[in-house]
Image (cartoon, rainbow, N blue to C red; front, side):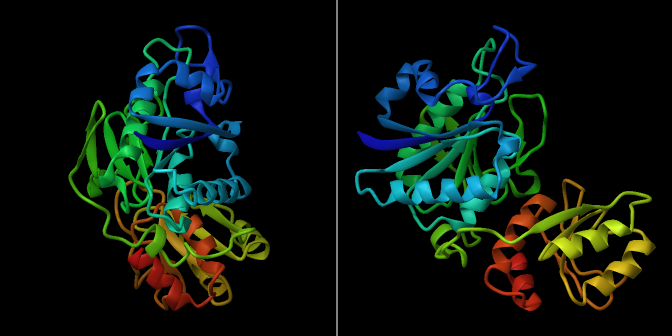
Length: 325
């Protein structure tokens, strides 16, 4: 029997509300040990130990908690008796934590994130099954070296591409055009593909000492967006990400102004559109002063830019990472 560590951070899977109801609840109420009592069959999968790192709504995850979680996973992974790690997490920002860990963990043992859309007190809560399958996936030899994974509603996702696409359904995540990595049937693991992009020990950021992260913020373009926002963000951050319309687009007032800013600041062009890719644009960025986010959403582009700025401010190198990671 394999040894699995469950690191709990809170979220809806640990949430509590009116008995039977799935809305209007407080996230991060129950301890992970309480949740495990609702999944007795999980003990037949592995020998389980638990760590309650924190118990918060995932909107309260931040740079400091990401670093703490990374350090904790590294500590667990160094134990030769640990075969895999499961992280319970709120769904709102699960994709950000998964992406950060996918780029910064230096281990090949399985690391699997999961959570739920219904609190533990709801009728037909989805947390117990998601947790059961996350442990089963963390036990699988197929998950070794596959990068950070997430399992939700019988589906296996990569930490690079997972995104929340629905705010109320239990099947709340998708990867869109890139597809999932596979699926679960109870405790059986079925991989269909593997991520080919660098991750974990092959990521350029996995061997870094991380104590703090650079300040990077996101400017959201909308019709009539205040021009002064760009000046403020450039003055108070080491880099910024533009969440533009379409393929990373924006109005002429922003285009003319922030390309002056981009000559002295690192600016990434991304899109608020869910599907698609942001490439170079001869119209919106004729001098290629900015860096296209390629397949990354604004919030994932922010994470990658923070990590990149810890190594360099060379835009050509940062551009290469955005294109290849």
